[in-house]
Length: 129
Image (cartoon, rainbow, N blue to C red; front, side, top):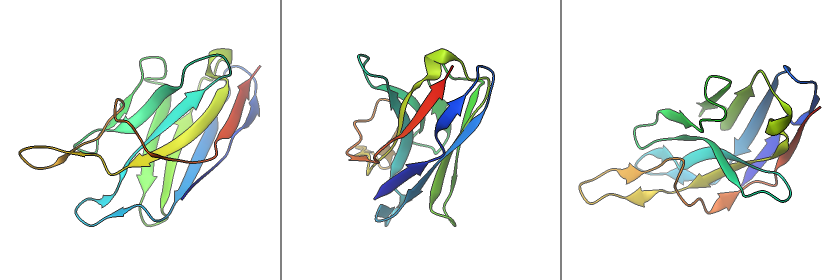
């Protein structure tokens, strides 16, 4: 289960921190599933915002790089997305996503922005105006 919170309305240039409390996504080998943040505005395609890659390094969409920071606190079972310098183009419903990842032939698993995630939260709305 994934439960997002922290959305709201801010003026351009403002900041928000989104949280996603997760449960039931323990991976016996890697600790937790692959995780990331996505967003979608009505009439637009869902966009990957940030995700951990196969080595656990956060990766970001070009549109948010240097403004957004993703982090995870496994002790608190919480994924975060710190958003700064928000602009109206960031307005969207933001979703937390998780997936076991794709096993790789020589070990490890594939995680990242382009992974097809199968577990989703209900979303939290971010409005910048």
